[in-house]
Amino acid sequence: MLISLAASLLLSTSSGTRPNTYSERWLCDLWAGAQCHATSCQKDGKERCQAVSKQCQETSRKTEVDAGRAQKKAACARALLSQACGAPKPPECDGLL
Image (tube, rainbow, N blue to C red; front, side):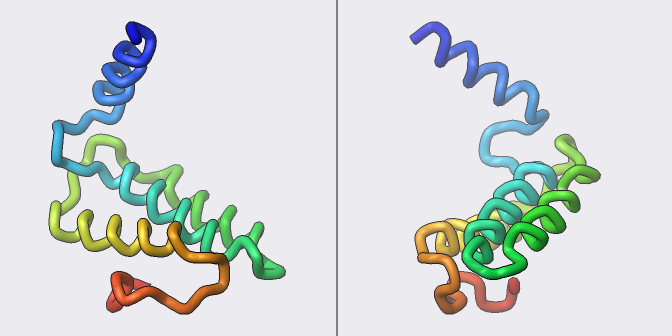
């Protein structure tokens, strides 16, 4: 229990954000993971995943993003992650992809 508490504290302080705020890096990593999942069954899935993941390397862990934008993108990412690879775009992603 002590280890999990220490790990969560370290994670929250290393991200540089307060509760209910989102950094550019967090949002980018979430989005990249969802995109990797959604394209993993395609022939060029590995290359697509590497390309979208590479974009996150330059994003800031301290720059906060608009909560509305973050919530919309996170909802889309969660929907993509809950679907099978290659499934049609979920309605949560309308206007994002």
